[in-house]
Length: 290
Length: 137
Image (tube, rainbow over all chains, first blue to last red; front, side, top):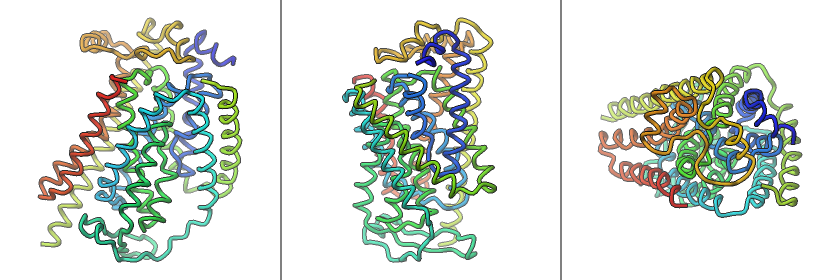
């Protein structure tokens, strides 16, 4: 664990390496539609030897930064369904607190196991979503969706018209978001990779709307557990500064590169990396690491 | 009447979007200033080798570099301490979604949408609760 010693002997070099890593994480995150979280925590724990509780603290702050940036653009583009977001945020924030509280109670090795699981799950989700064709959506919303005024429309650039959609299975969506919130609070990730399919498949939101709304919610979900971690002392300026800034800068670069790079090949590569790192995290669990 | 509502709603969306962007840049700048300060100024709080060595284990306790009491915040800011400045930037960043939810609550109120005023207040409550919950556990 040479990098660990570097932190004590030459903290500025350590910090710089953290910054570089985070920028890379931000770029990949933006290109592949993931938050930085899923890459940051494994990198900090496996590569840099940081204890997982501080890694999670740093990651959750970075998640707020990246998602808020994207969220601003999506709201301006009228993709985000703010009412759906607000309604589901009740679930995600409650879940986040439960997750964060759990995170402090569980022995660290179980966090590694949970992380390995979510990485495999994310790899699977990415694999499934290779063909992201938007399908025609029903405009019929459920009764609850009508009562809560969730049904809406979004501007489809390609068809050059306003496309209406009806929101369904609101209760199921709420439950799924509760689960996503727990994961987010537990592991310091955005769990957008789980939120988007949940809204798309269960609630009938168009993919672009799901992505935009998910991004909008991730920031609030992360803030719920971040407040908790902050008062607990798991958020360390020395770590958070390079990580949060790096991911922020990387995400900005990534969105600029998006137009030029073919994401499908990257996607396949990244799925392989996810699986590999997941196994490393599982190994840490087996070894009883912290 | 329909069109006026649409215009109002659109205005709401733009205000939220503007807040998110502006707040994000502000907190990112503060954090960056703090980080640069840690490079040029020696003896920043929380950057000593002993405190950093703690980060590889789970000893718990307060995070190195984060002010615990108000007077530590004030003295840190006045002294332009790197750790305090970064901590301030982090607080701003965490506060950003909270402010966004509070703003949404007000916007829903101005549109007489009481259901969503209630929902956003609920979310706000959970967020604030979390902040105090951490101290207990």
